[in-house]
Structures are given as C-alpha cells and as structure tokens.
Image (cartoon, rainbow, N blue to C red; front, side, top):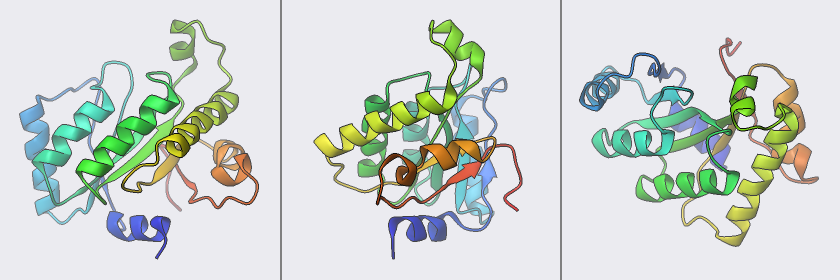
Length: 184
C-alpha cells in the first residue's frame, strides 16, 4: 500500500473540522472536544491556521499527545507564517513523535498576509517555491518517518500546477483537497 492509499484509509470517509479563529477555545476545551470526536467514531480531525489562530505545529503537537487514537490534519498550514524548510521540519517532528497520525496540508492565505510581509501576492509561484524548499529539506535531511503532504486549494489550478508531478517530471502525486468545497 502506498503512503497515499494508507493515509486515505486512516483518515476515514468523514473527518471533523475544529474551528480556530476567532473562537480560540482554551486548549483544555479543544482537547476535550477532540476526545469527544474520537469517541464518536471520527477517525480524523482537521483544523487550520490563519490570523489569530494558534501556531499549527505547536497546536497539533498538543492535540496529538492528548488524543492518541485520532489522525490530525493541518487543513492549512499557512505558507506566509514560516519558510518551507521550517514547515518540513515541523511535519517531520510531529510524524516522528506520532507515526501515521499527522497529515500536513499546506495552503496560501489571502493577499493581505503577503502584503503584511512586504511580498507580492503570486500564490501559485509562491506555493511552487515553498514546496521546493520543503523537498530540498526532505532530501538533505530525510524524515525518519514518512508523512503525507497535501495542498489546500480553493480551485483546481493550484494542485494542477504545484503538485509533485507538476514540479518534478516523473514524480507521482497524491493530489490535494479543495478547501471550503464539497469533496464531490
């Protein structure tokens, strides 16, 4: 079974989304909610990162340690919040500590986030560069445990132009997921 097939099986058919900003429940309440979702039969829980949310790797480290029988997916680890190599290291750390339980979804936030950093908003170019940084880090420092990466995208152009297959001829891609859209 490939990493993609294994991940799809572990995630289950339906996952739950934990709201983040502006709610920001106390960590203990979020742990309890995640526990209730696992007890209700959900095999995966997702959350995202944006202005006013917790930093996704610290946040998920806490939840993974607290609820050991659920897969957690970073629906959007926002690429404006850290360098690609740092995201790869964060994913590697969580996957090593919690094998088969972490999915790293990377996404581009809105244009105002790029402007706050003084960067031009070219989401596809930025994502391609970001994923290349992640690939370089993974090549130079291979993760001891494989973990899946997915692209979070509002439409079809991002996955088509930024997938591993599109960036590296001959390389297979596991695809992406549509953010704020039906899976059908």
